[in-house]
Image 1 (tube, rainbow, N blue to C red):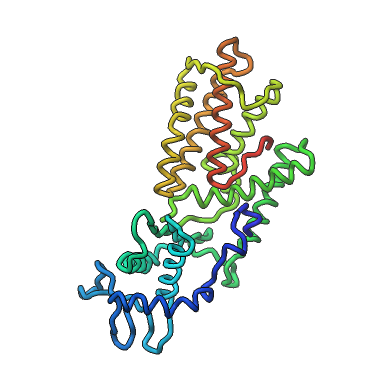
Image 2 (cartoon, rainbow, N blue to C red; image 1 turned 180 degrees about the vertical axis):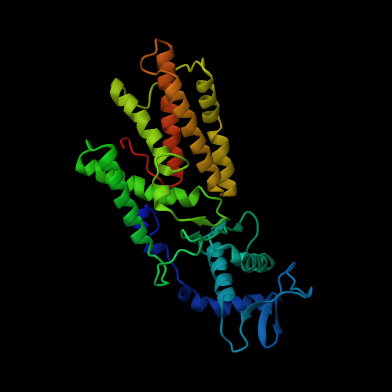
Length: 334
């Protein structure tokens, strides 16, 4: 699955729960020595500051069960200590469903009180919603088993190949295969990342693979369209620096969109709200489409022609970079 998605993690990056077994007792001992634990109904618990139950009483985080066993809280505390002390991580991102928010906030607070999680180190819960089927329920097969992601990815690539065969039958077999993979995988990724991660969304492959609307294929097509302009004109990119002369409203709107890219990237690098980057790229592609339809590029006289070619290249580079940040390939042909 990771290979299909282009994820860079390998088996060497994984440490399962059992990897921390030999650290659980030392973690409990350290927290006890710091005075952060006390017995509650036979269990050894931490009571992080600021967490109360419905009755207004301190909310416990069970670090060692009454039978001497350990649960998720202990493992998560061992994990955060390991990541800070051994891996020297400075930013910890926990991509876990929204219902786990309070649990992780309590873990972070105990880690702060223990002196592990201190500036510049920070930990964040990147909560997300659920993926739903067309019936609005959690995505599952009729048998009740979860659908395998690898099967969904294969289906997306297969459907993309069918679409490409109709839209551009002149593509050779190898190029068609590469483009189908870029479109199919990109469509699934974009559908997930273009949605506010705190909200649920409906998994609909037909919609994801559409060439219109806020989808990856629409953005990829805008990029490929620019590349085709360069091929037709026999031009290479990136183009040399050129003065960009704004004459038409569509040119101005596109230029203003391009100028805001850096601000958007800086914002989402901190907030991790990737749907904002997706929204920006969709707006950019829409602006380019309006520019492309209204403003002749190769048929314009100089210096307008050079200006518009440069504007096209800036758009191409920005779309490619933005999609790359989302882990999506921008093919040159579609």
